[in-house]
Image (cartoon, rainbow, N blue to C red):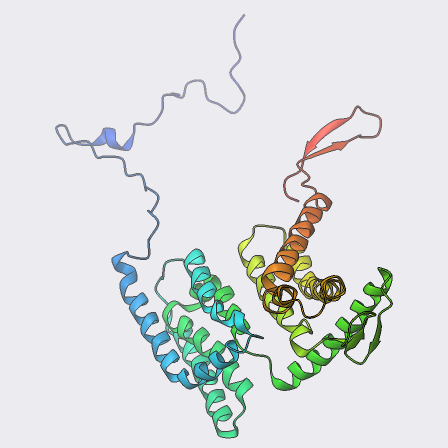
Length: 347
């Protein structure tokens, strides 16, 4: 039986492949090597191409720190008072975050460099305005657009994309404005007193509140919820810690959003636990017990509050891990058919 050639093809036409391009070379000519583009090796920070941008960036940051030196001197005094003692480690964490997220510098269009000059001019103009009218909050916050401008001048938008979390995190090293601090401090102090009194009453202690004082039977003097016990310090420290964790951990965005929202409630809970534990320890050991005073006042942050806050954060992460279950294998039962298995990537 004869074989009919497929339609659209001429049986008389030769089906031999066309000669390769390199087969047409002159006799005796060397064969040309095949050119295959190899993947570019990752550029490290000590590559010669990165030397000039790093020197430029380091010089601009050093000049900015020198220009803001008086502001940093006043800010460091607030770090030594205790309420903002975490300010010492904020620049260190920002530097570590820059190191972790670093990407090589590439050529920058002139327009992006001029945008960096504009940001730097805005920040320095705000500093001059704050210096003229002695407005310290504006003076402090003006450092943020200034350093953003320095990074923009050297690396353009590409540098801002990988550096912005570390630069924005520097906000946590500055004290809150006095008006906000006083307003928040009073509300947190009253909330901590009311909640601690309620917890003590729930535990069977005949405690009652008068202002920011908690009177407990058997204690010669009422338990005072002072400014240091308001929870503002823990709220600022744990808020900064939550933001830092969001930048570092690999979790879905909704998990990170929940972590941010829970920072302040966790700080309030651990502060209430601290005040309640202080009242119970005073009832058991007496207000004159030096060990109890050391634990409740000097080492409460390290012994009670921070470990409990980290434990609550770990518990929250475990709950989120179980609520947002990865949908790797989803069982589907189509109508009229047998159950099948569909693979869905993501969470």
